[in-house]
Image 1 (cartoon, rainbow, N blue to C red):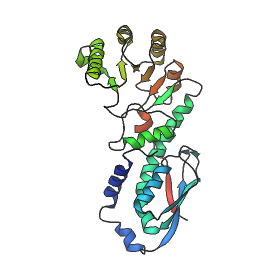
Image 2: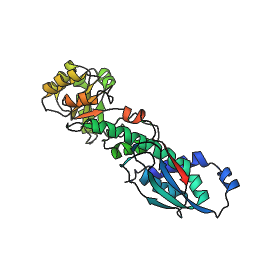
Image 3: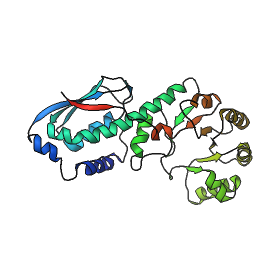
Length: 280
């Protein structure tokens, strides 16, 4: 399903790229010229953005016809053809760069996410993204995480109460921060999950004593420290590990017993998947 913001994001992308017209295409291609292109994969990974490509083609020219050969979420290798597009050549050339920019970025994120997901196979641990996203492109990047097999953390500041270190310090401590958060939610009749970040075992103990949270986040704990904290929490709350989690250590964190790992790297450090649109 397309994210709610899709139409506006695509509109802004074309406004940025097209301006007052594709003068190169208008100068070299007859207005009624017809033909076709195919999307050629140039590196192995996980494909993401096919459904979006269909929307982009329709946005540019409802006469463009796209034939999908490989769906979102499929593993691809160099030489695969994901889909073909036929119709007006001018329209296809206008759509080309925006379509590729979206798909290359989304496929890179889906590919990186799938690497994390496969690393955690056999454990109960799920992969979460973060808010470390590209401004105005978050919905597409988080969509790509889901295509890659991961799960979305909160989308923004409005759909979860995530009490982090600065909130704790400015509020005067963990008990005060939790009390204030619960009072705020009650006063404003909001039903939002409350997650609290802890920096050490002392803070974990404070949360266990106070309660009234929906998840405990262990921030920048080592795998050994995580195992100790998980044993102490003893399934009273779901547990998330965050901070410095990479492909090299993700399995160790999962095996330490957490329910979730969250990593900004699956989005902000993902490498685009190489692909191109070529004439049929």
